[in-house]
Picture (cartoon, each protein chain N blue to C red):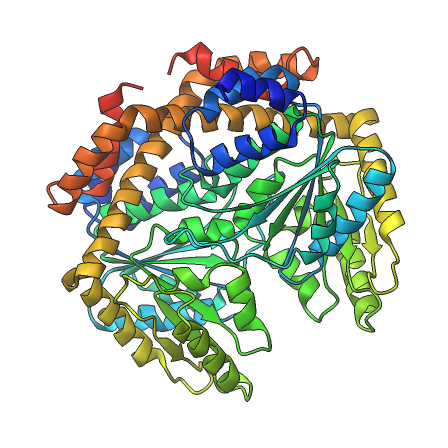
Length: 316
Length: 316
C-alpha cells in the first residue's frame, strides 16, 4: 500500500489503515511525518478524554463503561491505553485491560495499547501522534488511558480536552494525589470502588481539598466534581458521562472554558512542531550520531559537548 | 554579572553562580544555551545517582543518609529534587524534604528542588540541564530524586549512572512496581522501613521477581541487589552505599557495564542535542507562535496544521 493510499484509507476510517499507521508510530517509521502531513486538514475534530490514576484503581472498568455509553449514543470511539515499560529493554508489561477487550469485536471501537519502546521523544510523543491519527480517521471520541500518576502522565494528559483522575478508597490515597501533583490536572475526580466502606472518607477528603482551593485557579469557573463509581453495583457511570458532557459545555460556552481550550490548542500546536522537529533531526543526524558515539566510547569527547556538536553539524 | 563571569564562577564551583544558573534553567532564560556551551568541556565528570519511588517511601531520608556518608568521604555533593506540579498553573506542592534541610548549612552540599513550571521540554529536560550545571561546577556526585513512579520518572532516571528504586513494605507494593514498569530500571532496590513486620515478605517478593528474570536483560551481568533499610534503627545505609560503589565498579570494569555506560553517554548526547534544538526553535518561532495562536482561536486552522506550519516557517 502506498503512502497516499494509506492516507486515503485512514481518512475513510478504515480500521486496518489506522492500525497500520499507529504501528508506524511505534516503529518510529520516518514516513509517519509525511503521513501526518497528508491527513492534517482532517485532524483536530475529535474530543480527547484522558483517564489517569494509580495501577489497580479501575481505569479500565471505567473506560469500558464510558465506551458502552458512547457507543449507545452512536459515536465512533478510539482508545489509546498507554503502558509503562522499561526504557532500556523496551519490554512492556501489560496492565489489566481485560474488561475493555469485549469492545474489540465492535468495529465502532478502536483499541490500541502503546508501550514505551525507546521513543526518543518519549511515550508522550508517540501517544500524541496516535491520538492525531485516530482523530483523522473520523473517530469522534478518544479515551487516552495512562497507568501511573507521575510527571510524564501529566504530559500525556495535556493532550486531553478533559482529564479524569481516578482514586481508590484507601487511606492516604487522596493525599498521594496531592503529592503526585495530579490534583490540579483533574477536570473530573472519580472515586472508584465506592461500595467499599472507606469510600466515604476518601470522597469527603477530596471534596475538602477541592474546597480549600488547592487545585483551583482563581480565574477558573470550573469546579471539578467528585463522582463515586462502583462497578460491583453498577453505580455512578451515568453521572460520570453526564459530568463529561458538562465539562464539554463549559469548554465551549464559558469564557474560562474557551481560554482553557485555547491553551490546549496552543499546546497541541507547539508539541506538533516539536515532534516534527525531532523527527527531522533524527533523519538528518543518524550518520553523525554513529561517528560521535565512537568518540564517546574512546572518551575523546564528553556527552554534552558531543550533543552540541551534533546540532552544529546539521546546521538546524 | 556578565555571562562570561557567570560561567567562570560556575566553573570555580561558586554556590551562588550555580544557584543563579539553575534559576535560569527554571525561568527558561534563552541564554542558558550559551552558558551550557561555555562550560561544556568541564561537564560529564560527575556521577549521577537517581532515586525514585512512590511518595512517602522515604526517599529523602535515604538521600540524607547517602549525603552524610559521601560528605564524610570528602566528596562535593549536588542534589536535585524533582517536584511534580501542575502543568497548567505552574504551582508546586513541595514534598517532604525536611530531612535533607540540615545539609543546606554545609557548603559542600548543593540542594535544589525543581518543579514543572511549563517547561516545553518537560521537567526532565530542566532536570537534565540542572545536572549538567552541577557537574560543570565540580560537584562530583549528584543525587537526582524524583517523586512518583510514572513514565516520566523513567526519562529523568535515564540521566543517571545508577538508579535506586525505593519500595515500602506494604502489600502489593512490589506488584505496583512491576505494573509501573520501574522494576527494569532499578540498579539497586531499597526496601525502606524494613523494621515493619511486613517488610520481610516485600523483600522476598522483590527477590523472587528478580530471580524470575523479569527485570534482567539476558546480556546483563549486573544483578540488582535488594537492600533493606530502616531509618528508625539506622540500618542498611552502609550496605546501600557499598552497593553504589559496587555498581560503579561494574560500570567501569565489566564489559556489560561499559556497554551500559556507553548507552547512558549516547542518551545524554542525544538529549543534549534535542534540548538545544528545542531552545533554538523557541527562539526562532516566538513571533510566529503568536500569529498562529490567533488563527487557532478563530478556528481558521487546527492545532496540528498550525504546528506543521510553524516548522515550515522557520526552515529548520
